[in-house]
Length: 327
Image (cartoon, rainbow, N blue to C red; front, side, top):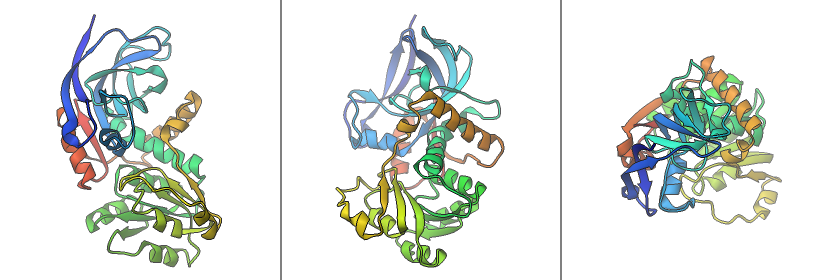
């Protein structure tokens, strides 16, 4: 028996108009796989990287790494998931931009009753990202001060709330005054408007000239040098995105000259590859959401067939918080 739905596919990389609304036909899930019908789908900057070709994947292909819905069928050797379960996921391969899909049971997490589908689709990739950034890339401690770029974005708003909950001061960059107010309302202690304020001067003022121990940078090319300059000696730059483009090749001598700095380029997929790691990270995230330490801000909703509009808005910095697609 075959299941038919619709979804977004791409045959070539490029602008948002390469995203095509196409029928999808699925058979029985393969061993170890599950068929899920999405109720909501997350939109993330990594989707744009795949669409433009900055990140490579086989073509024709699909997009999307985050979703939530109901299990419709399971393949052989699936023991922890059954039809009717409420589930969510974040991870590769792409394929979330679809009404229905097959996905490895390894990636799926059962949703607690206190978390709705839309919440889950808006928080899984972003929330798990914050979890590894704050606990594994660098172990943040109460009383520390950090620099966080794009503080009013999807990851940014979750990170600001998470940081406040653990007693960390955030110096966050934003693109305008409206986003500054939003970041502040979510726990960002000091906001810096890019192109208007001097981030380095703010960091020196807040830290009495010491710099910060860690900078979280999802912007990439345009912020790399400034991020390094914000660090104290032995500080760490966590580069986890390329919104302004990829960082050019780096002369490692720069790290030495600026105070024996450290640089890391982590990915969520590394931290969720092992099932026990994924489960522990998700438990931390779910608990903070249920206990209302973190609120999921969904500021944009689009019909799934209008995913190109969601990409255009995200690329042009017209969004705040999380964006989701509704099948």
